[in-house]
Amino acid sequence: MADAKRVPDNRGDSARELGRLAWLLDDAIRVPFTSYRIGLDGLIGLIPGVGDAAGAMMSLYIVARAARLGAGPGLLLRMLGNVALESLCGLVPVLGDLFDFAFKANRRNVALLEGHLNTAPVDGEGGRSLRWLLLLVLAAAVLLLGLMFWAVIALVQLLAGAMG
Image 1: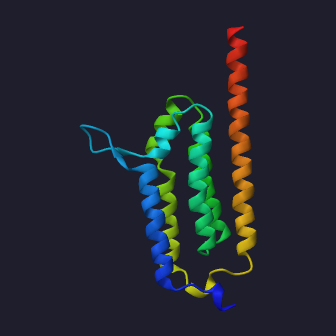
Image 2: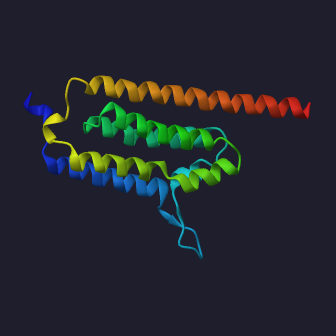
Image 3: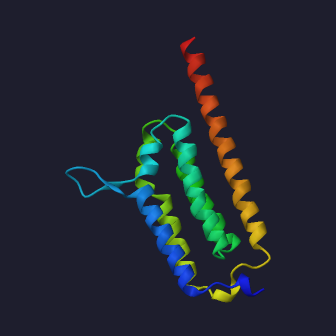
């Protein structure tokens, strides 16, 4: 039972680490001659089909870490919704990529997690429900990837039908 509790500093270190990851995914590269920033998630998302799936997997890592840090089901669902919205919109050529650059789901999710960590007691971490929360994140990841691959296949079939 003692290992179920974490020291608050570990939570802060984890939040800073996830903040750096979110920055890398959403804001690491300044667009020349502007103050606007983009990240690796948006750039990888430009690769048709697999780019958005890879970006979703990186984003889901942040959600999984949030579950390990004690985020509740409501917060996790909100975070999953951000990832799903960005990933599914990213499937739309050009407009989806622009949305991906602007929405910044990873930064949003880290902000949500930081808000939770600043208000949640340390004692509530690592409870019995952690296993279920991680299963929820895994199930959402599988569902999201399935939807993304289905959408890509449907788009390819639509384009093939229009060309032939």
